[in-house]
Length: 193
Image 1 (cartoon, rainbow, N blue to C red):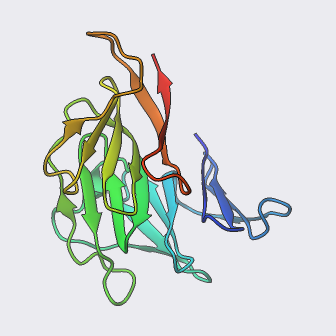
Image 2 (image 1 turned 135 degrees about the horizontal axis):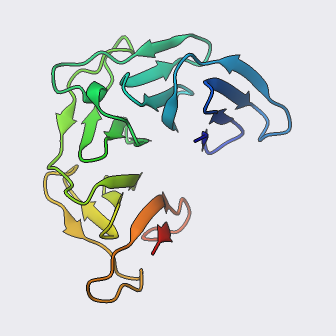
């Protein structure tokens, strides 16, 4: 599937299924395309204008504002062997979600080395989506049990499905999460019952 990300300003990017990266610097009024040579499953911008792409089985890549993609090298706990289903850049930290685990890292001084991928506790119900507040609260949309949250980057997960309208025993997949950038404490969820 095609994925997209906006930087919160005027830049947008779309990665197509066939490996094309479409960029807009003017909120979609005009577009330029380039072959990405990667199949991106997830995208995220940092505050410096760098774009990150999570791939099916090639790890996480970083595009500098005017550069070629560079793989973020990491230690043996690198999430490279699993699909990166969601990415988020928050508070100077890059989060990468695989179907069962959340990882995070702080980029190295050279901008291409992951200094240390830290692994969360496993998410048994599967990760479909990811949203992180400016305060570092991590929300994960799961494949069957709604939303879970963590105040410590995934070391302890707790249910957070208030407001989803779930009946006892009902399963729900949360495909997309978004933290409201203007209203603290508001989280949007796109669900599939």
